[in-house]
Amino acid sequence: MEDKIVLNKNAQKLVSNLLNKSKFAFWLFVKLPLGWFAGMRVEYLDGKTCRASMPMGWKTQNPFNSIYFAAEAMAAELTAGALGMLHIANSGEKVSLLVGGIEAQFTKKAISLTTFTCEDGDKIKAAIEETIRTGEGATAECVSIGRMSDGTEVARFKIYWSFKKKK
Image 1 (cartoon, one colour):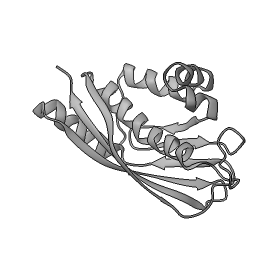
Image 2 (image 1 turned 60 degrees about the horizontal axis):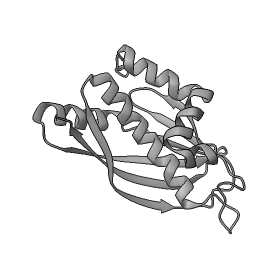
Image 3 (image 1 turned 120 degrees about the horizontal axis):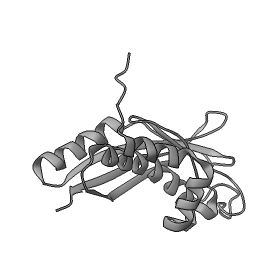
């Protein structure tokens, strides 16, 4: 049986807000308008896993009738970023998070709704705990895999997150 991560009230509220379609849409509109315009959604979030979807349509398509790679990257980044925000909220500390690098492999054309999944919450939590403990920056290498609804893998992103305790 997997260990469940106990979330404090701030972290629980964050999860509730990210999973609530209207609250998340408003947050995207204010903080990440391109994500709002594209129709990005958080489908699932706990301390270990985050799933986010990106629809295929005129707002996200490229000239080859598939989801534009930058739209895919945005959804992949959201999966690990939401886990980072969750663990920061749960820590009660002020920690900054920033993408330090990204690598991507595209294996198939994303021609329908694509869901990205990151299961690296434990790595992210450990990096945040390290920066809180040491005061030095810490990094986490996260993988987010995109699949269409039929299970076909379309992309695999490695996202290098940097965390630093704020003074």
